[in-house]
Image 1 (tube, rainbow, N blue to C red):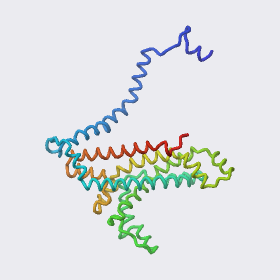
Image 2 (cartoon, rainbow, N blue to C red):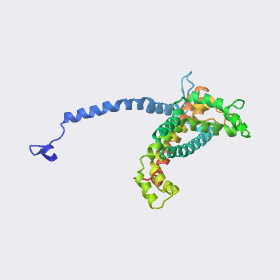
Image 3 (cartoon, one colour):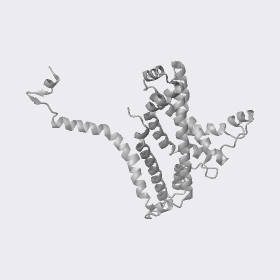
Image 4 (cartoon, one colour):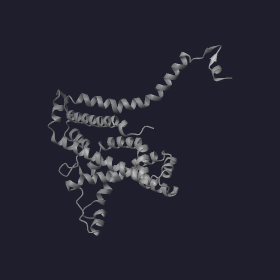
Amino acid sequence: MTGLTLTRLGGAERRPSRGTSRRGGVTAWMFLSPAMLLFLVFILGPLIAAFALSFFHYDLLTPPEFAGVDNFAKLFSDGLLIRSLVNTFLFSFGSMVTHLVGGLLLALAVNAGISRVLSYVVRSAVFFPFLISWAAVALLWQYVLDPAFGLLNHYLELLGLQAPNWFVDPAWALPAIIGIDFWHTIGYTFLIMLAGLQTIPREMHEAATVDGANSVQRFFHITIPLMSPTLFFASVVTFIGAFQIFDPIQIITKGGPNDATISAVMYLYRTGFQAFEIGYASTVALVIFAVIMLVTILQFLGLRRWVHQS
C-alpha cells in the first residue's frame, strides 16, 4: 500500500479534525508556557518597569516624583558613568580576545590526536574553574596576587622581575581582573571551540595535505573558515557576559583604585542600592541594555562578511 493510499480515505485526502488541531495547539502552549512565564516575569516585566521608573525620581522611601527626561539628560553629563562604560568596553574587548584566542588554542591542542585519557584530564582541568563560584575565585586570586605574600609575586621575584601591586596600581588593576576572568571562564569557551573543531571533517585536512598545504595554510584556509560560525557564537556570548561583569570587581577592587575598574553594572549597583536613586539607576540599566543590544546587532550585521555559510 503506497503512502498516497494511506493518506486518503475513499478518494479524499485525510485532514486533521478541528478537535485534534485544537488539542495540538493547547499542548504546544502548555509546553511553551513555563518559558514564556519566566520571560515575562524576569525579562520583559523588569524591562518595562525600568523604562517606566526612568521617568521618575524615586528613592524607595518616598513616593516617586515625575521627572520627565531629567534622568536621560543627566546621562550626558555623568562623568563616572562614561568612565564605567569605557572600563566595561575595555574589559569586554580584552575578554573577547583572550577567550577566542586562548579557547581556540587550547581546543587545537586537545584535538591534536592525544589519547582519550589525556584529553579527558585536560578537558576536566580546564573546565573545572568554571564550576567554582565567583566569590571563591575572587578570594583565591586575592591571595595569589597579594603584594606581600602572594604566590605569583614570589615567583616573579625569584626570576628577578619586579612584581606590580596588582590591585592598587591603576595601570594593572583592570588587566588583573581580565586575567582572573580568563582563568575562571575559559573552560566554557574551550568546550565550544572543541565542539566546533570536532565538526570539521578530517578528510578536508587530509586532502589539503595531499595537495601540498602545510599546517599554517590548513589552519587559515580550512580550520578558521569552518570554525567561523563557532567563533561568531563565542564572540557574541562572551561579549554579553563580559559587559555584565560585577562579582570579581565588587569583591576584589570595589571599583578602585580611583575608579580604574568600575564597571557599568557596578555603577548601576552603586546608584540604585547605595545612593537609592532608583529612577536614575533604571535609566543606566536601559543604557546597558541598549549597548549590549546594539553591539549584538552589529555583530549579526557582520555575519555574512566573515562567517562561512556551509
